[in-house]
Length: 199
Image 1: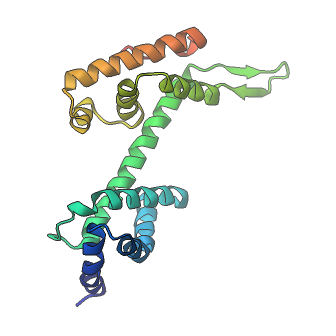
Image 2: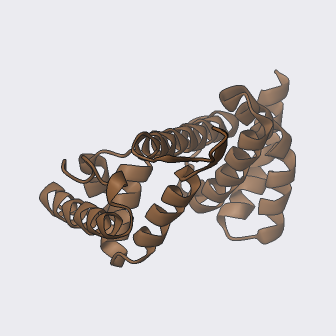
């Protein structure tokens, strides 16, 4: 019997204990698999800092979803899929934020002093502006805007996640984009061109 198979067999008592709510069993399971999760995360992301983020997210998901593990697959196989999903979600979320930042940057002027040296860009301030306005939305609008425009989920995905009709998701998204566009227009009109026009 291979090493991973033997370890899976020896994990069963810990898994059952953790599923029953035994904190010590869950902690032992985390200690046993932390290094493996981190190695998987490094392989998926290619970046140690991102891998640490993925590892932490995986542990949160492990705690949340362990009761649903039914033993039909090896625990290590199931845990790898949890890690893979966490890495993919992190990548999608960061890619969406980078695209949003790039779109903002395209419409962001750069201050230049008389000597022609770049003094400061408004990219960071524009990003902070969007985050501030996001906080001013209603809870539902903020949730939908974050999932669609910042994390990159489709409106269909979000409707399933939030158990809402797709048309309701699109309505909240439209209102959120409109509100943020209005606020940006008032604060920084040069950034608003083309923003919030599509739903």
